[in-house]
Amino acid sequence: MADTLYLRLGHQPETALHWYGNGRSGQGRLSDVAALIGTARLVVLAPATPMLCLQAAMPSLKGARLQQALPFALEDQLAEEVETLHFAPGPRSAEGIQSALVLARAQMQQWLALLAQQGLRPREMYNEALALPLQPQAWTLLLQDDEVLLRTGPQHGQAVPQAQWQDWLQLAWLSRDPEISGIDVYDTRSQTSPPEAEQLPAAIPMLAYQAIHDPLALMARTLASENPTNLLSGAFSMREQLGKLWHPWRAASVLLGLWLLLQAGMGAVQYQQLKQQDQALYQAILDSYRSAVPEAVNIVNPRVQMERHLATLRGSGGHSPFVSLLNRSAPLLAASEGLQLRNLRYRQDELELELELANLAQLDSLKEQLEQQALRVEIRGATSRDNRVEARLALREGGV
Image (cartoon, rainbow, N blue to C red; front, top):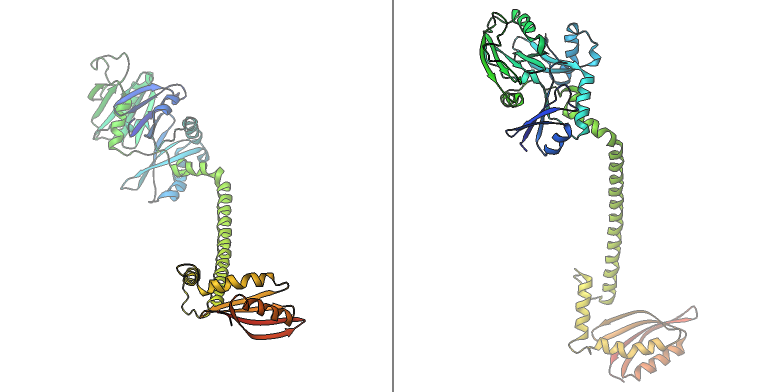
């Protein structure tokens, strides 16, 4: 489908309407249009009958201020209460005259509701009479089977029943601008007479006559080069419509936002806890490395440095002095009842053990057993405390 789809509602949009796009046109129901629109931009042409084209002298205002002031400026020209009407501001002339389209708010709501039922959301909505082509110093008349449309200026257009159009046109012609020289006529009637037989009222010149098959195609070409008043303004603007769609989800979105903030906060707390645990674990590894390798000075990665140190101790064949001393002493230490190993250090081919034993006799017995394993044993300290003995032994290879 085309980038833009034009939709003409007519007086019974529920059952019959016209569409035009990409050089093709058709007639059908709203459901048919919903099936073929795809991603096209939707432009709606609304019936001119329920609308008034008004103007008033006003100061230059923009946006919401203009929307608020416009009803009061036009109030004297209206029979209905302004609260029941929709005001779509048009352009403002250099002389300070503000134009506007006015129609019942309920009518706008009905049109938009019908479109929304089929998932159709127009980007623009125009008065169909203001989509007729307009030449300088001329009016434009569109003859149809049911009614006639007349455009008398850039921001002025009207509709009248087909049976009354000649009398109505004659009255309108009396109040025309003197510069208007005649009328361009477009005829879409199914059974029309030649222009010679279909005369305009007396003294109204026909500047041009053209029989056309598809008035919507004519209007689409006009809209491509002009920018008439968009009815989707104020409470019916695209922003307001999206706001209404968003409103039911606002509370849920707030709750979702709070939940996301809570999750982010909990994640931050957990991150800090894990970071603290990681730092504590690193410090424990560092302390263990310093205890096992007290001569170490530059400690960058204690885990890797410990692995390298152990590899050095094992040597190429796995029989380094450290491993040999540990292999020969560990079974005796494990077999000594009540013995507790408090600490061990290895440096310069010497394994130093800090032990806690039951008594001095057990210490002497352990020393003898270690010496029987071809180890040189030196007791570097022994202290009795709370019915226990704390001792420090140094082991080297090579018996006495």
